[in-house]
Image (cartoon, rainbow, N blue to C red; front, side):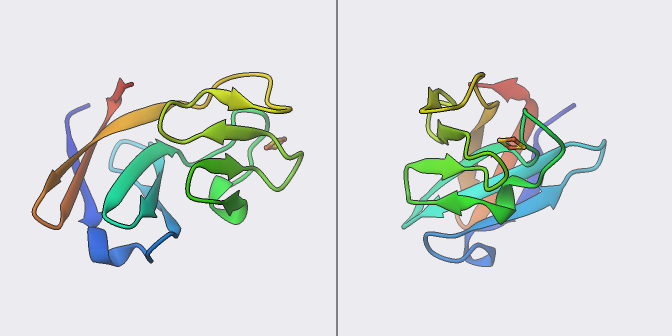
Length: 105
Ligand code: FES
């Protein structure tokens, strides 16, 4: 799969997150902290739960279902999480955000 245009940065609320379903089936969650944007899987690696429904404090993403947590910059588990979260490189061109779901960090 190649790099995909996902959205413009202004499409994500500041300090918010939004899920995008890419052509080819990947569900990607984009998380915005000021001008920085992170990308990770949109679905929890534990069960089929949308991570967008969880909590994000600007660094740590929490799945609301069983409170697994990850650092969104690295995908490393925090606290209760039993496995890492796939995170992806984000390319910015002006306001445009591109992600290649085959390019895990
Ligand atoms: S479904 Fe996300 S932590 Fe269990």
